[in-house]
Length: 169
Image (cartoon, rainbow, N blue to C red; front, top):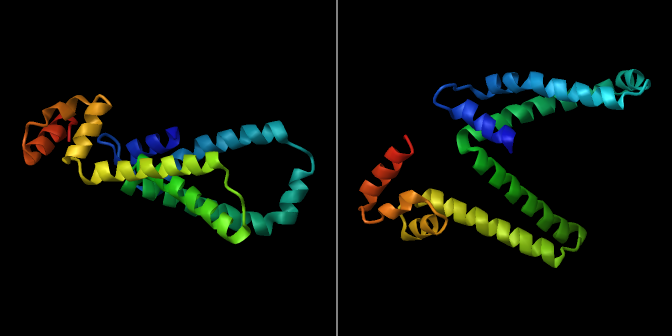
C-alpha cells in the first residue's frame, strides 16, 4: 500500500511528476537491494547451475515482470492508488467466483460476508467519487467527520468550488 501511495505522489504530484517508465526505473534499485538481501539469506550453492539450466524460462519471466511494473505505474497514474487497490479487490472477487463455478470450491460464510462488504465499499467509493455533491456523499462525509461536509448550505457548484479550494486544487 505504501508503494502505491508513493507511486501516486511521484506520478501525479505537484513537485515531482514522473512518467511510468521513469517511475519504474526509480523504484528498481531499492527493489534490487531488497531482493539481494533475500537472496543472501536463502543462498544455496546450486543456484548458479539452476540459473544456467532455467535461463530460457527466467528471461521471459523477467521481461513480463518489467512490463507488469510499467503497467502498474501507468494504472496508478491514471486511476490513483486507491483505485488500483480497489481494482485488485474486484479481481480477487472475480477469481473466487470463477473458482467456485469452474472448480466447485466452497466459499465459507465469513468469506462471503467479507467479499460482500468489500464490494459494498467499492461501490460506495465509486459513488462518492462520481457524485461528490450528492446528499448521500455529504451525509457520509459528515458521518465520518469531514469538516468540509458542513458546507452543505452552498449550492452544488459553489460547494464543489469550495471543496476544491480547501483541498488546494
